[in-house]
Amino acid sequence: MTTTTTHKTAITWSSYSTAQRCRRAYWYTYCEGIELAGSAQDDALVVGDAVHRLCGGESTIPDLPYHLGPIVAGMVGAWLLRWGEMAVTPDREIEAWRTVTLLVEDVDANTEVTIGAHCDEVRTDAEGDVTVVERKTASRVDKNYLDRLALDQQIAIQAYLAGTTQVIYDVITKPPIRQSVGETEEQFVERKREAARKNKSGKSSIRRREPETIDEYSYRIAGWYREHLTDAVIRYPVTVSTERALSAITQVLALGHELAKSQRVVLASSIDDRAVNLDCEFPQSTQRCFDYGRRCEYWDLCVTNDSHVLKDSLYKVRKKREGNPPTNQEIT
Image (cartoon, rainbow, N blue to C red; front, top):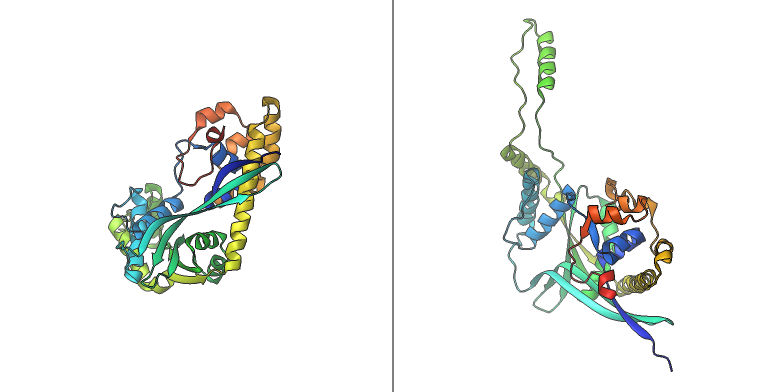
């Protein structure tokens, strides 16, 4: 009688969506557990993270680049003006971590997969009814954007793990306003020369346009939100059917099992076979190299065939978040 080995792994929405976009990016991010050292975070991510934290009740304002402070303050202020829910109460669980562990049986080896999700907020009312709150920051919100939210796999997974069908999206639109940087000396001279040419006296008293101050910029942002508050800060309820939640969980479970098997195949390879198996089990997806309008952080490794010299010089170990899959070092 043979005993089937049971392996353990974990998967979250972040690792699942990374694997969907590019298996090689999943390998570097979660199996090797590395990230580009010294890379600056994209402005959109910085703003989104700060807004999530402040709307979630954090009392300390995060460190922000100077030019992003008015944007974050304007977005959070508009959300407070619309909903006024900064205080954390017992019925509002912020950054709620929910998990379920399920077994996938296989001929070769079973996999115990823990599926986890960080919910922005889980609310429980006096009757015990649970609602998941997901916050979104967006540059533009239209009907297509809202329709896509209703089919979001991430929220279906969160709803399943929280044991509810009720979801609320808090969508906060970023202000379409940029801080005026003024004009250069060359631009000013040219504008002054043109104004003098049009003046009968041949002279001009115009002044150089100075950069907009932070106070002026903040005032313009606040004015935009006052004018567009109901359209810019939206609360969008969604009901997640049990069938859709089960479908999402099944897909995540299957992929978690598959990724764990692929990881073991690569790690069990000899040095000579490692590169071949890595290409087979965790292939590159060239369609995803420039997602979000920027080059993938693992581009240098992909174009140099996994150069260990570059890996040691350009990358560092990622800070691991709760629920992430086990790295190679953790399963060997």
